[in-house]
Image 1 (tube, helix red, strand yellow):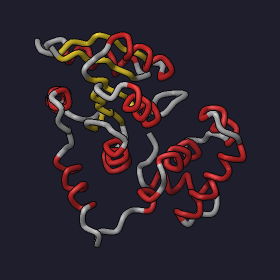
Image 2 (tube, one colour; image 1 turned 90 degrees about the horizontal axis):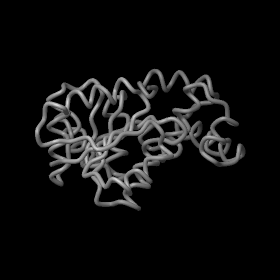
Image 3 (tube, rainbow, N blue to C red; image 1 turned 90 degrees about the vertical axis):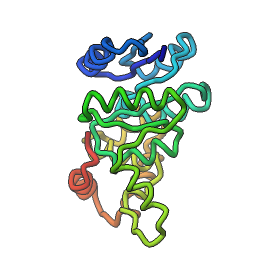
Image 4 (tube, rainbow, N blue to C red; image 1 turned 135 degrees about the vertical axis):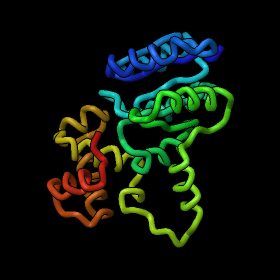
Length: 210
């Protein structure tokens, strides 16, 4: 029996996953959470085989939580889930230790395949993502500018683009406002942009907003 934990702040998504899995005799949901700050403790207590983790949790990014899980509970397989297209986030999550990445627009049968595959210890990626990963091995393929951002820079780019102030970002990430401003300056420099308005336009143009 594959034991599943769901971490997503949208109740409709959690209910949809539960309804989907209810017809599968070899998969069982043993817990769920909408609060990223509670997830680690629940995982330690319940010990699931796989956690289905939303990448855009309130208060703590799914990417940060993924890294914590892989440090503290390395045996738990993590299937990342997002509304964002694969090209924006999938490679980052796989590099951080995720066993797979699936979008919320995927077909139900794809989701079940992904669960079984990561539970067995293998990686789950779509055919499209597999081709992108293969292209990464080609040094002649030019990377998109946002792919050169660090995970933290990418996270702050998304937060600025979603309309959050530097103070809000600092509070949410538990860092100083001056540190946020330093990251912002690095992001602008790497993307060759000049203002927050430029960042917002860039994020929308490249589908980086949930």
